[in-house]
Picture (cartoon, rainbow, N blue to C red):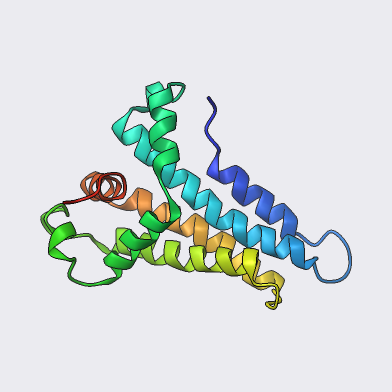
Length: 169
């Protein structure tokens, strides 16, 4: 199995908003670009979780696919909402790194929330009109979010992915 490449989502989004002819890009292209920006991040985090707990060398197995497909948008959103708080709930806090989550994971979480809301609006709110600059900003925010995630310590990334995959009790 070949996993979706987040960069391909971003590259497609950039092509959709690139000025190909005079005039503003079509609304459908601007909307799709915003959606792709979020989905690039979503697929990157799904792959990270499956690679972390099943193994990158096992990407062609059904177990890897099972974990990859088990990540859902609501769980990701709820975890990111929790990370907006300076102090995590006791339920999640006991599974956080000793010093808590740092600025990189928190920046990633904030970006995910913004991107997910933007994607939802772009996909489902027909009354909103978009400017090219908004789509370009979403693509940049998505790329920056992944940089923030990768810049975080291994301990923080592992803790984040654990909380995403395993429901604390």
